[in-house]
Length: 108
Image (tube, rainbow, N blue to C red; front, side, top):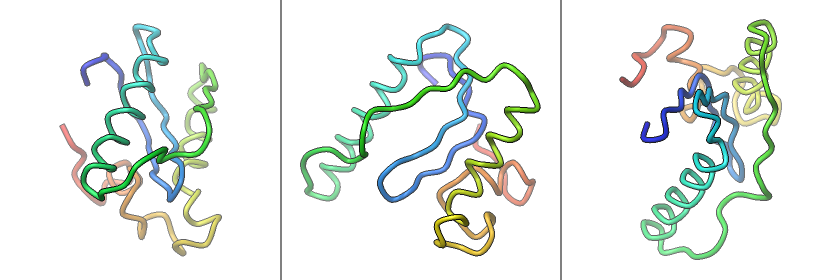
């Protein structure tokens, strides 16, 4: 990624998304501005839509312990299950669960 970030887990929901992202350069605000701006522009042009795409401002939580990162990844991947979109996380197309579980090949 252009900002040197590593995305460990993600889940794109209908009106928000969850990311577990490592930012060695400490540039999270730049990354989030790029993700929100670039994707919203892409989506709006493709769908002939205008305005905001996601609700609210991003919320960042500092994660230092590996055990907490595992819990956070579990929370991220179970989000579509908790809201009733799917019965199991591997059924949801818009998350990194299948790649982390070894069911699908992760992107480079």
